[in-house]
Length: 44
Image (cartoon, rainbow, N blue to C red; front, top):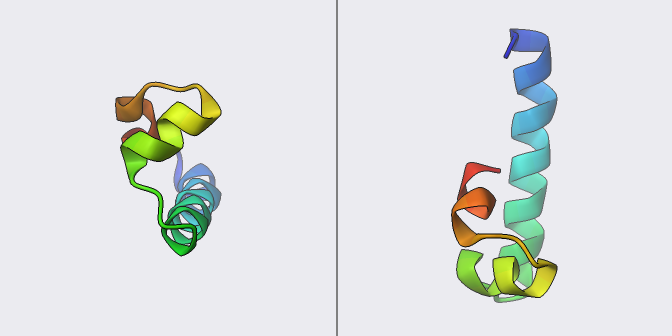
């Protein structure tokens, strides 16, 4: 991943984390909700 790709990816991950926390969801709960594996959510 290049630096120009890393900045948007970090911003996206931060936005997902913020919204997830605002809704009181753990990574595992969020993963179940969206149908993804919990480790993938952690990678995001």
